Length: 298
Image (cartoon, rainbow, N blue to C red):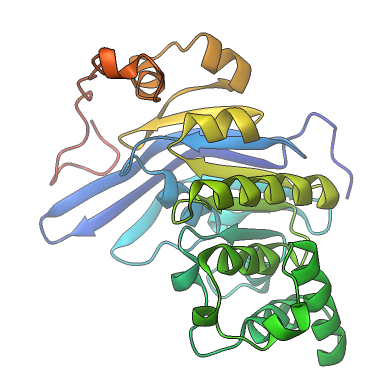
């Protein structure tokens, strides 16, 4: 399906997500709006607890009780399936099943929790292919081996039959990337994909994601707290604080001329040669929704 060139691949409008706890209601995401253009990378940046991962899980409708998506639209303009408002799909809808893992996929933060410990890595990637593509098991195995090679895993035939605990952290993350991209999604969500890895492997994984993005032509939502990663990977950036987007724009503009105090504080926290002689600015968080408050209200 053809859309106007200026139409974004994903458009999120006034998304609101709350968690209903015995102690009260926590507004995790507060009326946020953003869009991601085709072939572009949007970085969603913020400290832990700012609502980044809740936003990502909302896009795939992975929010579980006591969490609930209260309002908003999440419009995916898919070349393969047309325009879909993910927020209003029925939980048992076949179209939602197609969106998850087919049109959109996710690289989770910790590969050991994203992979099943009782299935081989080859079996898990095969399953993703068989669920979303009409191919034989033999063809699925061939596609899996091709993908393992493309993500830089040597001896793919041997790795195919291994379990996650038999692989290093870097190899496990490559397996998760292979699983996420094997069905050629239109949008890849990468939720802090290098958090558990050492610096050398981090650079390799980020380079791999960028290379495969160019090859497949997908858009990327990159979730991170690291502005160094943002500068390296993203085209656009949205800064979150207490469930709200407080600043957004091109990476060039935001890094050169940040407008919000929270953005400046995050940038000031980056290590520099002079950081040891400089006190880090501390920005008092603006008053958010208290426990027990009305969801989405200030």
